[in-house]
Every structure is written in structure tokens, then in C-alpha cells.
Image (cartoon, rainbow, N blue to C red; front, side, top):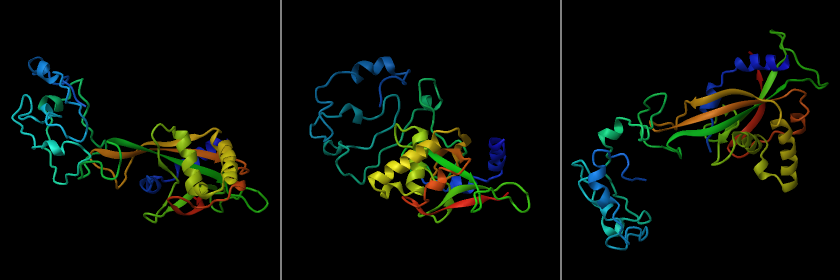
Length: 284
């Protein structure tokens, strides 16, 4: 019964503002079917200097990849001198020509699809502040409990007559808005680990704790995050950092402390990207 009531209560909460504020703290011959046979012998001719290194110090290094026009087209490359081939060489004026063949843009099975924001145009291409092309994944833990009086009894809402549900919210340092704790999923990290890590860092200031304090927090959070949970939202986030080619997606997951025993023994303390942290009533 408690889970059903919780689901109904959470369904009434608008997550739009919180989710919008989530911080986010090779080529080959395949894919050129019209020209594959005629050029394959020259493209794959072995040259001992081809992989001479990234500093571009040898004359023949990376030579065929700089020839114009591009195979099967009239596209001329920007000129790249030998001494500026390597990526480690500073070249602020480097302005390469952009080109993708019409046959590739047509979307054959062997080609990667065009990376486009699923919600539509944003007026900006590239990645902006986001690290990955396409979706950049975040995770948002929604930690809830029942509001109780000093005697431990659940408090009733004076109008609805229902028990009052509370969730943990943080005030972000960067934009000053109140939001759900959360952040980016690290490479190779499971969502469950991100949810627990971000809550500890932003709502409990775990990064600034001693080793002993961190162990105590970890034990209590493990108990909270190991119980049954409810995925509230999973998908696209309307975020100001989104572009036509890179965007935010998140998974917001509710962990409910039914008795309050876990969270009553954890002192909320803002940390990392959070300036403030508090319990907020869900009063709808």
C-alpha cells in the first residue's frame, strides 16, 4: 500500500525544473562501394613511414590521407604541411573542409546514422560543453521519506488529509536553482553506482569526510540503495547544454526510506556542486 501511495504522490511531482538543472559535472575502404575496387590496392599499399608517429616529422608520414581531390569527388582538402600533421602541434588556424559523401548521407546499413538531437533543432551544432556525441548520460537519485513530528508520527496534510512525502533537494552553485541531486555517469560505471555516489557527494558532502566518516556513510547508503526502487523517468532532458549533435539523457530513480531510520541517521550537508541541501515537502 505504501508503495502505491508513494507512486501516486511522486506522479504528481513536476520533475521538469529539477531535470533541466541536472549538472552535469577511423576509416577504411568499406563504405565507398562505387570506388572500392579501383582504389583498394593503392589505399592499402604498405608504407613503412605511414605510422611513423604523431609529430609529422617524416616527409612521407600520413601522405595519402592528405591528397586531393577526395576519392570519387571534386572536394579539395585544406593543405596540411608535414610539420603540422601531428595533433600535438599547435595550429589555431586549422580549418579543415567538411565532407560526407551523398551515398553515406543516404543512410546505407553499413554507415553510422547521422547524430541528431531526437527532440529537434537547437540552433547549435557540435558538442558544446558535453563530452560525447549523441546522448550524454546522467543519473538522478530521488530520496524520499514521510514527514514526521518530534514523536516520530507521520504528519497529515491539513487539506488533503494525506501523509506528507518529502524528498531531498539541492540548490546548485552554478545556476542557483533548486534541483534533484545527480550528475554524469562515469565511463564504465553502472547507473546504480552513479546514483549512490552523486547523492553522497552533493547531499552528504562525502568528498570532504574523513576515511572513517566515508565508511559510515557508505554502509548506510548501501542499505538505502540496495532496497526496492522505482524508476520515475528515463530519457531525454531539456538542458541548455544540448546541441543538434549532443544532448543529455537521465534516469531518475526513487529510493524510499519508509521508516525513516536510515536518513534520520544521516546528516544532510551540501557538497560538490551543491550550495545548499534540504528536505522539501511534496504538498500536491
